[in-house]
Length: 230
Image (cartoon, rainbow, N blue to C red):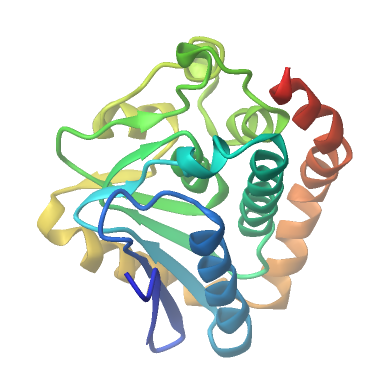
């Protein structure tokens, strides 16, 4: 598709709608499009709402780009981790309407956002890295430590367990789960409700809460990428 992320605005809520016509993988183009949407939102809006396409929120990093050699893989991971860290520390409230599957980096988008609305359905949500023989980097470890309920920490990280929407809500990937037909309306309503907390006070508090975690991610990134390449 020519437009991977469509930018719309509902009052002071910026709506970023991901749609690559497939499973919304995070390749360089999608990451750049989301970053551009966030740039615009900082100028023109007060709250951000990120949406996917029906049945598919995001399947994570683009495996074709990751398989293009060590240099290309590292560049994609640096770019993607930069986007995820930016969302995690974004000065405006960030809401996600999770319309379907959210795996690996797709699940990390959920963990990076401030409020996550999911929908009922046969969808898979989670960090499956260890289950497919991969090292789980520091960034998802930090995000999971912050957002995943302590009862589910080991299952969500070390065991690479995948959850359905209801279980994902209990675990901490989502804050609430609604019927698919009201997902977008509910997510927009929740985003609009956050206008009352948006502003400099929110940005300062969020920075105070999350800056130490962000610094840990950034300071360990080089070593972490080296572990991934082994």
